[in-house]
Image (cartoon, rainbow, N blue to C red; front, side, top):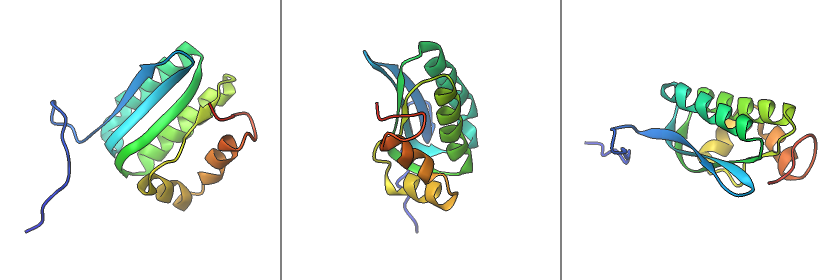
Length: 123
């Protein structure tokens, strides 16, 4: 018998994306399983961040699974944010996130942002 370590929130979801306004930054926090079921939440987070026009920090520290849909969200947040002149950073992603962005070849984009290269700089 296999035991699952999946955690659920009070609505029975196994993952989520939340937007939080802080004084100097907009924080997009991701938790649990990041997949296609969160498409609406990801769109809302992008819209809120672009509307607020502050540096964006994507917190993936509580992510337990990410598929290509999650990576697409990261890429959209980075692309739209930097096109609007915003700083977008992905500080210290956990292995589950780091592995998938490396596998898909987009890790260099976020490494560039963390080291001050290109359009984005660390928030």
